[in-house]
Image 1: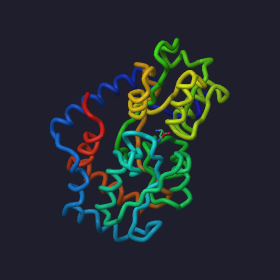
Image 2: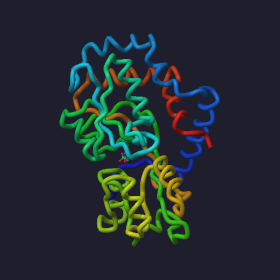
Image 3: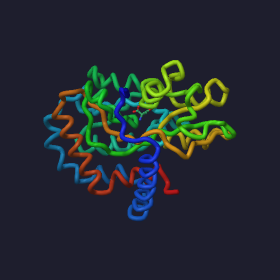
Image 4: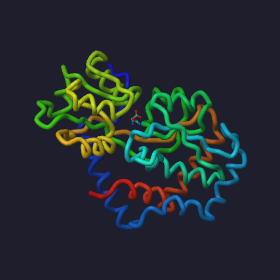
Length: 281
Ligand code: GLN
């Protein structure tokens, strides 16, 4: 009996990857330029959601506090200069501008980011967070703003060629993620090692401490690119929806965030942000 609800296995994920690729191509053709994503959002359009913002009480007055885990490229990562950037950061920035609030980012472990909104320490959590039934029981989610895929990273030459081959292997994951939950559900908790973040999981794979790492596809691509000798399996593990986490019952914030997201989707800002960080292949 599966504890975790997930929409797909293998075949559906492959279809979705194709759909994502199409979206990426279409998007980059129409909104080629760029970078200007957050300044677009900063313009006069801000007025439309400011009425909702007037009602908002945030953790710190005048600020939208975002809990994240900045080791998840290209959604959130820390630059060499120590600043945090990525799709989630630019999207949160655009939402904050629409709500007339200043974005404040708090970087912490992924599981702490989920707890942070539940405990009222942050207004929103954005960290490529997958919507699951279990999480919906303890927090609220915005409308989805992206899809994700759980992928499997293995060393080149590994005898693991499909998700089924993970049986009997040691699997590295990030603590508190859906990758951890799916793997412990499917292969047993003893088979799964939970690391603080994706980077340490990939380091463990490089050192031979685990046989594979299960992690979201975009960070998987970034980690494989910077770690020669690793590869991503062609078959995916699961398809997921990412959304913004908030405290359960904070209807005013939920509605304001959803209204802002809708505008950012409609005017192309969200697609421009994605295109800035994910280049069409
Ligand atoms: N999408 C995965 C989850 O929500 C992993 C997110 C992350 O590691 N930042 O569990």
